[in-house]
Amino acid sequence: MFKKFLITGLGNIGSEYWGTRHNVGFRIVNAVAEETGVFFSDRRYGAVARVKIKNAELILLKPNTFMNLSGNAVRYWLQKENLQVENLLVVVDDIALPYGALRLKPKGSSAGHNGLQHIQDVLGTDNYARLRFGIGNDFSHGRQIDFVLSPFTPDELEKMPDRIKLAAEMVKSFCLAGTDITMNLYNHK
Image (cartoon, rainbow, N blue to C red; front, side, top):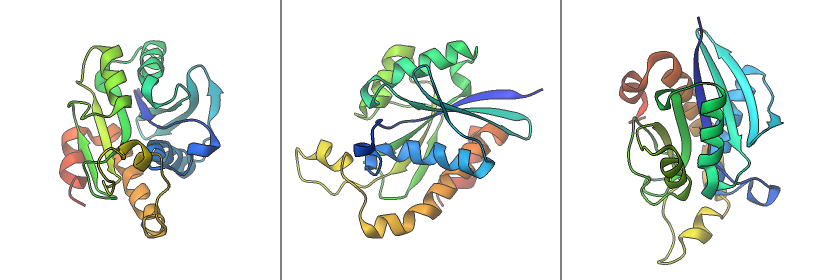
């Protein structure tokens, strides 16, 4: 019997946002899909792909609601697939981590991230796992929005494939081995 998970990569739709720091969640779920040879299709509240890995079914979601309304898509797909929040993993950018750092957490506050905050508000809980990808914080006071909506530097882009590959491994490990084992194996790589 397959155990199902909703893996939600956060980002903003539209070509003008593709290469931005805020869309790294989309990049990571894209990597999981590409590794397994599946494709996304436009569905209600976002682009969706289904992946089967060993005894797990991963429903990969890239919400089309824009970052600040991500909770609507997450709630819809949790309900549609009859999943509990324990089977949710949100993949998100994080300015509190240095570039490329990866941290899995079983729950936590939004830490000022509007996408996480909306998910928390809509679901009524912060008790869901999140995989945070560090995007650094090289911006002056008051320039946070400009920074997260800016492209990665050439140096960061050079390092990106290895970090995205590791993040995709963490997503699969979360589904197959669980949160604690995945945190122990990967959080300090």
